[in-house]
Length: 248
Image (tube, rainbow, N blue to C red; front, side, top):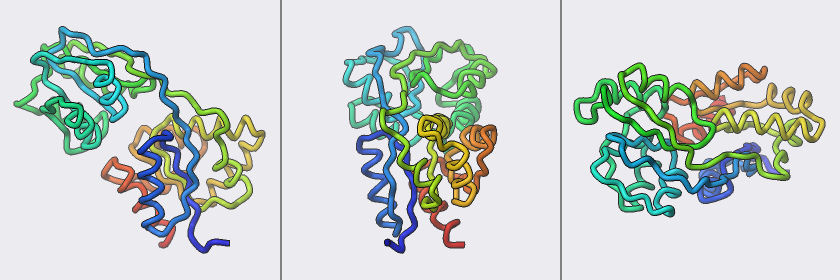
């Protein structure tokens, strides 16, 4: 048996999952890749009359590029560096990236920005069907006229739940949840296998790391104790701080 800690990761089964596994391996962990999100594109693109367009994920950036979105003079905002990089790789200019890579961080940064003004402007939020209301409500409160376009739906992949079985058996040392939906889908997968109570108990004995306060709140609402919420909302920070908590 390996002496390396087993760490569950729930990213979609694409380069994000591969990168997460590689990072965990470099950090000395044994990753358990258990994707809890799969992408179903809607083929929609942002509306054409917006002054500001906000993207909240790399997936959204890639989908609008594939759909041939052709912006005019809209100001383009990305919630974080990974989203910004995906937009730039697709040939789009990025005008704004907040220092805190969360919905609340983006709202706070835009509200105080002289470069990209949202008050009195038409702001298009292009994202998944499970986006946090924090972004829409915050932009509305800042005086923007907000419209949301759903670029893709997030569903739970068939057959997910290996990590829940490991947690139920007491064989999972840590879990890295990257969104509220990964928490909910983990518990759904455990329910489907008839082991929710055991899996929840297994997480109680493990180190649970999450990205962002909304994810932490979702976990708490479902009775899961959260041990790690990194200040930087990236998987790199989540992985490193979760493993550091395991060693402490």
